[in-house]
Image (cartoon, rainbow, N blue to C red):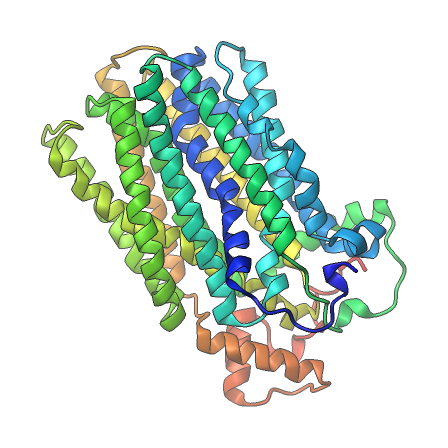
Length: 505
């Protein structure tokens, strides 16, 4: 009997948190490897220009951005099929992705051409989306209460940070073994991580489950949609998630925190090597220590977000990250090199901020389907996961392509040990101005985000109130809370609005 057939709530145990969190070895681990090393690998060992390298990254992200919502939509509707009933509508995709995960290692073969790297990167992005999109829905599938979902998010980020630490230090160890000029460093790293990805996905499939869907508006009898009708409604349904106020604000915070890190990651390796006269070994050490500090920051952020406000924790995190970036810039202007002991100071500030910025959006994401449910009367975790990934990857693609184009326009030369003053100035400007500008955007959005443990409890109580047949709020205070989170008047909730109207059933 598949897990989805169970009727009694299952107890979330330690091994459940570990299996769920362990899958972020793929989520955070692969992205840590790619964001730190892929551009320098392409430009130093593959002969690609900065523009070509970032175009590969950007094209793969754009293509994946259109694939990810489709996977989210399919996982929402696969439960009607035999495959969904047998393996789980989410977990089927995770199982199918396991034998395809070695595609990560294929990306790191040196000496190939532009089209080889474009195709292999796109292939891995497709496999990554196939596994990660359903994974991102599982916390909401396995738990309903605020605290348990927050612990799932914490387990994910904690283990993800551990994998990111390995992603930073492993190349340094391989460099020490193989030498600084060996491209095999990156191939061996890809093989090791491919094995870890497969193990993590297997454990996730074994120890996860999907809870039965409660009766709601999507249980009303209706014809199963044809494939054509489902595709016609796909993007209409997905973009309807942006009509949920809490989700719009959540996306603003998410993008502010993550795009600031995309820009920082894309420029940081070049900043250390060319602006600070460092090396790839020094980059590995600095990035590794950053991820260690991020691990500590996640532990602090979990407690902060559980007890107080995620938005307040977000603002503290953004301030810390910004302080680290500013200190880096000041030390560069003062003429320090990457060997200076003082460079651990901005690493600590940046790491504390980045760790919390990684955790907080994913902790709040787990509650977005609850806000949507009170508006539509349906559970659409897959749609929200797809939209988040779509927006995230489109914006990430644009950010990284912009970094590459700026560097190329400033005269960056691939495979060169020295760069012109103009190229170095461009690298420093991207790292400073780009990172800080996105942090400011995220902070401004966070001032309007009011989802807390207390308001989430009110939200769940009102969902049950409406599910019981009520059409008036349980109290004026409760009405005010759910109207603020949803962005809709109370009398328009529970399907009485255009958001629910275009749903495919």
